[in-house]
Image (cartoon, rainbow, N blue to C red):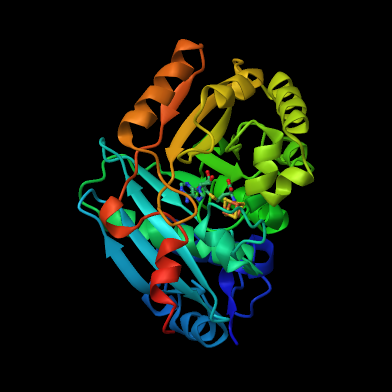
Length: 346
Ligand code: SAH
Ligand code: SF4
């Protein structure tokens, strides 16, 4: 199978026969990352012989869109097939001011087994290679280029699609380094959010590499027993350990951390749950409330008035709280869902 050229850095590009001068390597990089040209034949500023050589020996994107769902609010969700027949989802999100965020997957499936999560039900199919992560970003960047409503092309990236980013640390950090590079995407660290279920052994290392990156931790509940019930990772890393490590990181980097709190009816929304949360009532943290996005016979989304009341109570206690409003409600824009709806018969 042909290799994706995204796996080659500038130095390695120079080893390709016919890429005889440094500017040729730069030309390839510019064509892909800046001009978003994804077939070599269209790179008409290069000699035909080189384009033919590249076409025979390499691919560019190594993901194939097999489903596209467009919401009335501008959100577009894609299901991609990888070359090994696994699937990932990515979401193109547009806010009220037409600013763009890409929600990117880091694994096909996930092995963390959180009981409220559709991706968790899949189990881990595979860690994405960094070129598969970059392919999602390039594909969505091209969608953005074609979107007439976009004025500010500086996009944000959230690693909140399928998978646990810190469980695929090497490929994720490799892709972020490429995102940062001037000749490639030239994206500031502060525009990138990593969401993790709390793989604490990796968090200090992540900050060492990217001190300004935004970190979001899926806390879900600050009660140790309840967290263990719903998130197997809680048995390995306790709430107290989460607190200790995150506070240390905050003190070192002065970089505020988001705690993601998925609201589950009758599970984590009582006054006792607010008491448990008190240890995180601290300027290092910002609480993001995310109403559960599906209902089944085991867990349910709370009603609107319960959500508002819970948020109000937290605010009264002095927490910094925001609520994540769902984009693309009509197209099931949350990751994991499209996979389940579309692969049953594949
Ligand atoms: N594995 C990482 C990132 C992927 S999940 C993590 O767990 O943080 C991305 C976000 O979706 C997390 O905040 C997670 O808590 C949230 N999420 C998972 N299942 C959900 C559901 N059923 N309803 C609402 N949010 C959910
Ligand atoms: Fe994996 Fe995150 Fe889903 Fe948990 S919430 S199963 S860590 S994707």
